[in-house]
Length: 207
Ligand SMILES: Cc1cc2nc3c(=O)[nH]c(=O)nc-3n(C[C@H](O)[C@H](O)[C@H](O)COP(=O)(O)OP(=O)(O)OC[C@H]3O[C@@H](n4cnc5c(N)ncnc54)[C@H](O)[C@@H]3O)c2cc1C
Image 1 (cartoon, rainbow, N blue to C red):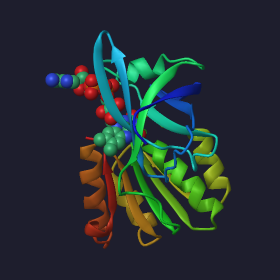
Image 2 (image 1 turned 90 degrees about the vertical axis):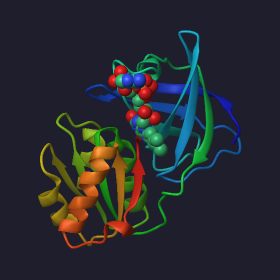
Image 3 (image 1 turned 180 degrees about the vertical axis):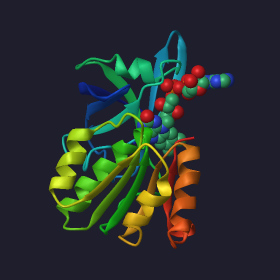
Image 4 (image 1 turned 90 degrees about the horizontal axis):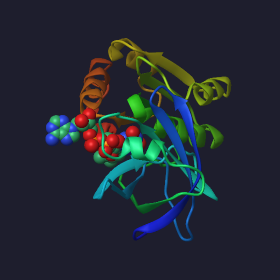
């Protein structure tokens, strides 16, 4: 989809410095869990664009992104200040890392919890095994993680070393990694330490 003005349905806090934006799905827009969109806005007279990954299990009627708010960042604080009824420019979807109807092991760092819960909900609804390892010292999306756990997913939240947590869920399905570069590197090292092949992991590096 070319750049399209999309209406914000809701902005809600889902944790410390973390918001979920629910956006109205424009005609013809389709995306799979794991794919991302480009959001573009004019902030203080400058055009800014950044990528955000889908955090809803589907894009029927609305879709969601989860934004970790960096108070010194250009776009994320602006997004957190949006209100229902505002519009934002959306382009996409993009990305070759997406859910393919399978058992999943989802490794998430920081705002990577968004795509992890979205894909986890979708895989669980499809009858697949779901394991999530989420590294954060102030976890977000706790309600949805609790629901996933109640629905049968294995959910491990850690603020420390990934190796032990990844070893617990290794071999449970296709490995996906969502988060910033350092987290992605640590995740792949943990996969290898647990006897897996890091080359088989699907990695969405937030930069
Ligand atoms: C494929 C992909 C998917 C992504 N998905 C998500 C997602 O689902 N959720 C999410 O929250 N993020 C996601 N991101 C990251 C997102 O695109 C933004 O990078 C993030 O939100 C920060 O943007 P910002 O404009 O708020 O901050 P920026 O303006 O980019 O700044 C980030 C930090 O860098 C500092 N900085 C900026 N420029 C300089 C400089 N020249 N020198 C020193 N420091 C500097 C700023 O002070 C700030 O602390 C994704 C990124 C990619 C590539």
